[in-house]
Structures are given as C-alpha cells and as structure tokens.
Image 1 (cartoon, rainbow, N blue to C red):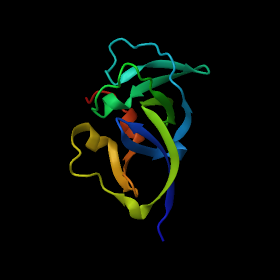
Image 2: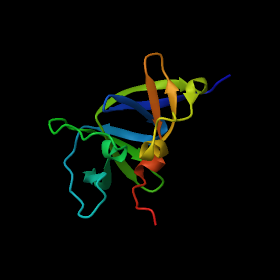
Image 3: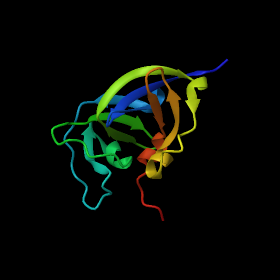
Image 4: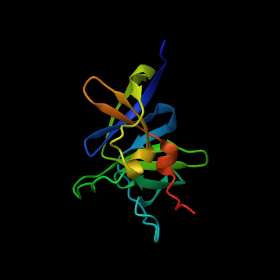
Length: 145
C-alpha cells in the first residue's frame, strides 16, 4: 500500500511545482520589500511579517528561469526552515493536492545545473508533471566556501 502526501502547489513560468504542506506557514499577496545591498541576485529583499523580518527569495531566479514580466507581481509562499521563516516568490499559487508514492520518480535526466539540485523528484499527474521542490536547498543561498 502506497502512502499519500499533501503538497501545496504553485506555478513558475507555467511549470507546476510543489512543496510539502507541513513546510508552508502561509501564503500572502505581494508585499513591499527592502532591498539588501550586496546580496545574491536571488534574494529579492526583506519584508516585515507582523514584526518578524523575512527574507524573500525569487524562485524564478533561483531555478534559472526567465525573469517575471514587470507587469506581474509574485505571490509569497512563506515556508519554515529550522531557524526562520523564508518567503518563496512564485507566479501563482495552486491547489493543495494529494499524491501517492507510486506516482513519484527521480528527477528527469534533462534537468541540469541548479534545477537538478533543487528538484528532489517528480510526480506524474494525469495532465502534467509536478516537480517536488527541496525547500531546504532552495532557501540555502549562501555562497559555497
């Protein structure tokens, strides 16, 4: 018997991604952010979330996708790491879906570079492919020593 998992889904450049529901704290519309001088380009800035300072990471940049159109505002998916909340900027939030282990496969060989490191696998859905984002790797933007 295969086990099931709930995933919070979102779109980036018309590609479907998912993260485990238990990692998502909340979803918010776009918030103004303070830029951080000399930060990596994937870090969009800092936002104040009810008194807590949250770092925002643009997942399009993190995954090496095309820039978001200037007329489009991202959505904040607030995820919890071991020591802080982090905002993942996505194009559009999707549904919470349930997947089973029997639809899970390793990342496709066609993924390369950063995408290969950040995608822990895929789920074959009836109408499309859902890429499972490794949240811990996605929020680790510290330069390698």
